[in-house]
Image 1 (tube, rainbow, N blue to C red):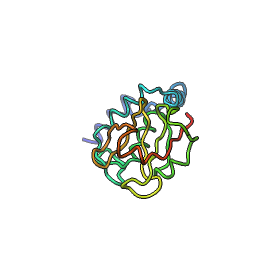
Image 2 (image 1 turned 180 degrees about the vertical axis):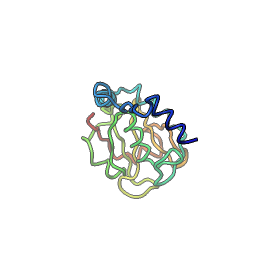
Image 3 (image 1 turned 135 degrees about the vertical axis):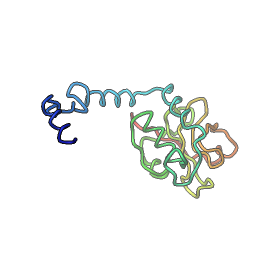
Image 4 (image 1 turned 30 degrees about the vertical axis):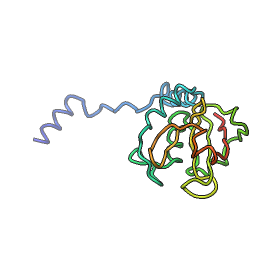
Length: 167
């Protein structure tokens, strides 16, 4: 039966059909570059849309998937999906990228906001993404993916600064 099928395919010329390339010269690389360029210049609308998709993701210390993530994994995932930029793994490492935003009044959506001496430990121990209007998105140990105000009674005294990552 197999030999008969092979003979039939050979006689019809089907064996000589080659699969189409996954990407063509005209659409592959250029499409990827276009998408990354679009993400680098994404505005607050895209940021809010991406953040919305992470609301309620459970908190899990050290977690990096939608089944559970910590604050730095949450921030990394949103930053990658929104802007196409890879951030370092931990909040302490993130605190060394970009340029400082020394005045909270100058924060812009997409800036990283940092907190020190939280339940996660001493020094820089929590990170989120500023959304505008005094709000930031983060992975809360009690609520998972959530939005909180900078003047929240827990976070306000622990605010340690912000960084702006060039896009």
